[in-house]
Length: 316
Ligand code: C5P
Image 1: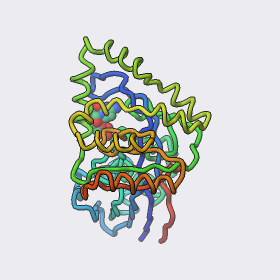
Image 2: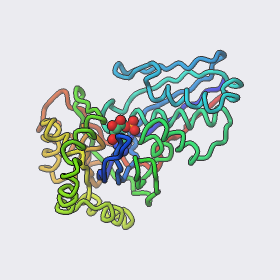
Image 3: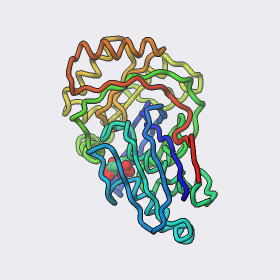
Image 4: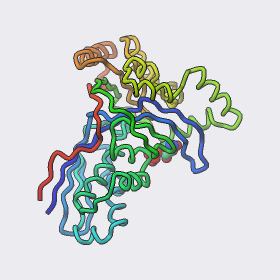
C-alpha cells in the first residue's frame, strides 16, 4: 500500500481583469495569482480494488464524483489505464481548512494535489507542464495550483508565466461563513452588464479611468515594490459582487478605513488586505473583528508562499 500526504495552498488574485467574452462561454483574463499558506491537507492511500473514494471533514464539500479532486483521480485513471490497473484505486481524504466557495481556489488546489500525488504514486514522471495540461481539463485555476507562487495568467487562466517570487508578505483574509459566490454567476453577470457589444468600448474606457493595468502590477512585482503592489490591486468581478453582497462591501471598507491595500479575491466573497508584518496583520484582524462584531465573519492571517503543492511525507 502506498500513502502520500500533500499540502495544497489557496491562492489570492492580486489582479483580475476581464479582457473579453469568449464564444465557449468563458472569458479571456489577465490575472496575477499568488499562493498563500492557508492550505488543505490531502491524503492519498492506494487501495487493493479499483475504486476511487473521497472523504472530507467539511459538510459542504461533496464526497462524490462531482468533487474536483475525485474528477482529477478519474481523469488520471482514464489517461493512464495501465498505471491504474497496476497500482489500483485510491482513497482521497481532504482535511479542509480553506473556506469553501470563497474565491481562494480551494477545490482547484485539491484537484492539483491529486494530480501531483498520483503522478508520484503511479511513478508516471509527468512534467509540471503535462500536469498543468491535465489540470486545464478540470478547471481554469488548476494549472496555476500545480506550481503556484506568483504567476501571470492569461487565456482562461491556463497560460502561465512565472513572476519573481514575492517576499513572505502577510495578508489578512475575511470571509462570511454563510456567504459563498458562484463563480459562474459572477462571470455571467459581468458579461451581461459590461460585455454586451455596445458596452465593450465603455468597459475599455472605464478600465483606463480606473487605471487597470496589468503592466503596472507586473512592474511593481518585478521591482518588489510593496506599496505599488498595494496600489495596483484590481479585480473586475468586484463590480458585480460588491453591489450584490453589501456585507462584503462593508468588510472591504473596514480594511480601507484601517489604511490597508485591500481587494476581493477571484469571484469572492473573500476580501484580503495586505500588511507589512505579522504583528500588523494580527492588529488589523483584531480591529476588524471588533468593528464588525459579526460571529458569521471568519478572519485569518496568512502569508505569501512560493509554491502551491508541498509533499511533507510519504510512506509505503
Ligand atoms: O474553469 P472553472 O470551472 O473553474 O470555471 C468556473 C466558471 O467560471 C465557469 O463555468 C465560467 O462560468 C466562469 N469562468 C469564466 N471565464 C474564465 C474562468 C471561469 O467565465 N476564464
